[in-house]
Amino acid sequence: MTERSQTSTASAAGKVILCGEHAVVYGRPAIAAPVQQVRATARVTAGEPGSGCVLHALDLDRVIRLAQAPEDDPLALILRLTLAELGLPQEPDWEITLHSQIPMASGLGSGAAVSTALVRALFRHAGRRPDPATVSRLVFRVEELHHGTPSGIDNTVIAYERPVWFVRGQPPLIFTPARPFTLAIADSGIPSPTRETVGRVRRAWQAEPARYEALFDEIGEVVVAARQALEQGEIAELGRLFRRNQALLRELGVSSEPLERLVAAGEVAGALGAKLSGGGWGGNIIALVEPETTEAVRQALLQAGARQVIVTRYQPSADPQEPTANG
Ligand code: PMV
Image (tube, rainbow, N blue to C red; front, side):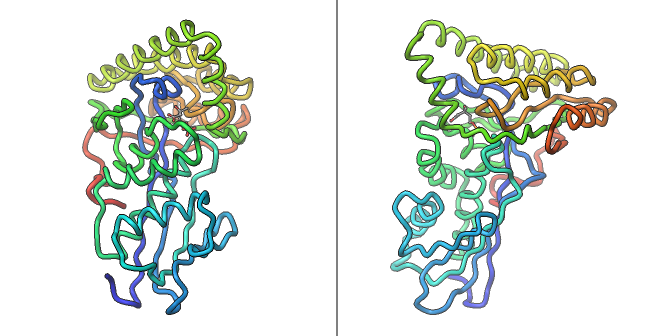
């Protein structure tokens, strides 16, 4: 346990799904990558003796006293799961503050990032370092509360903080692109509750299983090809695969007019390919850009109604946020 006066801080990145969303819920592969520009941060310090754990969720304007919080409160759940994992004999008197730059319900993994930052900060305050697999396992329990039937991709990519190839129920594969690539991530500003889009796809699949299984298979093939394109540094081919994935997502019924407008604007301005990322309907789109087109695409996305555009570059070398660093 750390000294009474000590403060422990940890953070977690946002994420985007590069390809394979929705089909990943049905056992097909998906590829996701962290977004380092937006982070959730948790800080733990000593509270008053006898106060128990008190969490100040600054963005939500909420104060949660763990002893009184309901069972189904997601923030209380991650604190309880982490304290149980740490095996502390009784609830410690810890004052916790939480802040996130990641827009909520936008497909950037804000829920999983907030939970991850909390797990890492609590472990750190107990003088321990969690391995990414432990973080991912704990955060998945909260994802279930948020989303109903999550695939587990959000908690995995955020806990490992590296590009991942993910298949439900299998250990994630961390992989490195052969050449750098850049994404412009544009926020439609429309909230996109994943539970609703996942639920709608499930009902459609139940009504027409053969049609939806065929679409999931096609998406799975796109993801296999995208991994090959990344590993061989064929960035233009990756752009083509983004466009193909977007067409299939449209057929699944998870695109929308505002997202289509952003995708088209990005491609007209020179992006190699663009697609929605995450649950769909609202949230973010990602556009694959080259250095010489980045600024034109960014401007075009803003003009087409994006609230915010984040430009993020992925390097072939191991990035400085190694999973073992744990925030
Ligand atoms: O949380 P989001 O919006 O990035 O969506 C997650 C991706 C889905 O495939 C739609 C759902 C899941 O659990 O994988």
